[in-house]
Amino acid sequence: MTYIHGNRSAYTIAEFCEEHRVSRTHLYMMVKAGKGPRLMKLGRRVLISVEAAADWRRAIEAETTKEMLAAEIA
Image 1: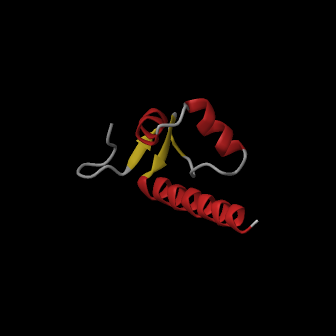
Image 2: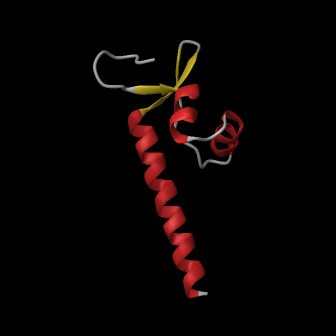
């Protein structure tokens, strides 16, 4: 579901999970641990902006790369 006409501006939790292939439970575990995307609440809906999703992907990529490089050096 798109909340602004034109390009998508935000994901519902279900849309984010489907697009990023993570379970709802895992998403909320990451958010609780401070490793999930930023959330915003609009009325009763909890949404994730496309910017927050992109920032989260970059952070996960950087963390993964850092861990892989550290493992190669060790």
